[in-house]
Amino acid sequence: MSSHKPAKSSFKDKAKPSNAKKSHHKAFGKSEHTGSKSFKDKKDAKPKNPYFYGIHAVTMLLKRRPEDVLNVFIQSRDDGQISDEHTKMMQMAQEFGISVQMAHKERLAELADSHQHQGVVAQARVTPVADEGLLDQLMAKDDALFLVLDQITDAHNLGACLRSACAMGVDAVIIPRHQSAPITPTVAKVSVGASEVIDVIAVTNLARTLDKLKKAGVFVFGTALDDTAKPLHECDFGGKVAIIMGSEGDGMRRLTQELCDTLVYIPMANTPDRPQSLNVSVATGMALYEVARQRLMG
Image 1 (cartoon, one colour):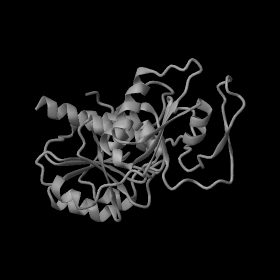
Image 2 (image 1 turned 120 degrees about the vertical axis):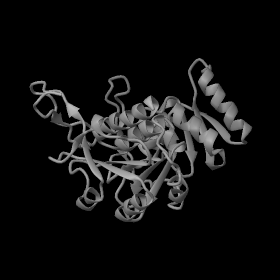
Image 3 (image 1 turned 30 degrees about the vertical axis):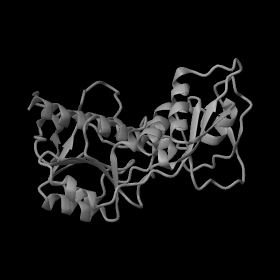
């Protein structure tokens, strides 16, 4: 290593605008062919059962919990044809006795509150979070791996983190019950269905949960810009491990940081005028890959 200390990533979450909290009852914008489509708010209330959208998200809904899917809407084309992917989804839904309706893309955009629906929307019950009691079972694993997200409130970032966690073999993602983005259709879409696969545990008291993990032999790594932080690649991620990623802008809360066994950072290049931070979902993917790489190398 060079004598100078590499620049650090701040792990800050540059939150993207999220439409997760907007009503799905919107008027379709007139700028359909300009790339600047927009919805106009209406006074209609949100439905109790939200509309999930996107091929991967809806496919995982049908595979993992078809009993919660109420209706499926497939895009109708002017030529009357249906794509192979949409045909497979229709067949899956019909096998479970789920109503399938054809709808124009404008109607799908209204239901999904998004133009990124990929021609399929499903109305379904909200994604359930796992019970805290699941931790007792998972902590018994010799190589348990947890991702802890401390106040990640942007739906796009949460969805991207879940996608990386699922791909890198995380056993469960832990989030605060009241200080995190909920598992919305936007999260499901961005996670490409991973939100239906990986266990997400919403805890009432994150500090108490971290203390419980530590008492069970889980080594807790926290990502932070701190003089005591170690470069990510110099850490040993064998055994039971929890990786904590901090919130948008502020990083980990003080008590969360105090409960960490070791603080880590991602070294960055000393390129002039480079960005001074990484988006939290990008940093999450990099940190989890290092854990997976070390474990694969044995």
